[in-house]
Amino acid sequence: MTDNPDKQIRWHILFEGDVQFVGFRYTARLLARKYGLTGWVRNLPDGRVELEAQGGIVDLRRFLLQIKSQPHIHVARYTITAVRPDPLERRFSVRGITE
Image (cartoon, rainbow, N blue to C red; front, side):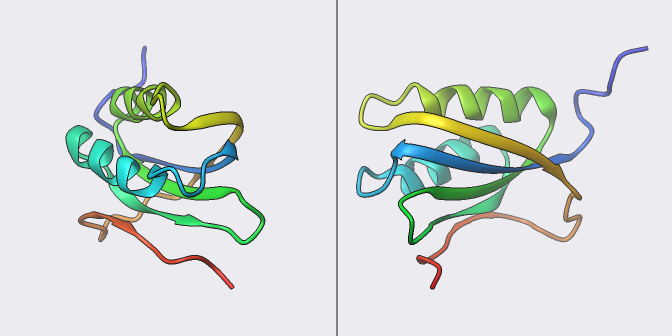
């Protein structure tokens, strides 16, 4: 039996590389809306970008592939951790930098 592709899952992703000051957060929001994902994205003080995205596995994979293939964004490394979905979340937002 295969996993349900429509089951809501949530990924916490940390991106490293040339990911700040290149429009990463707004590109992520645009792509998240394209794929019907919810979540958030923000810059970290150490130069990384932190993101949580929630949706079906197929859409999450497409989203990640699109982020990594943007010509103005250069992802050197990323780590994905599965986290608990938020059933009340309704949109994908851009957050400010963390302190």
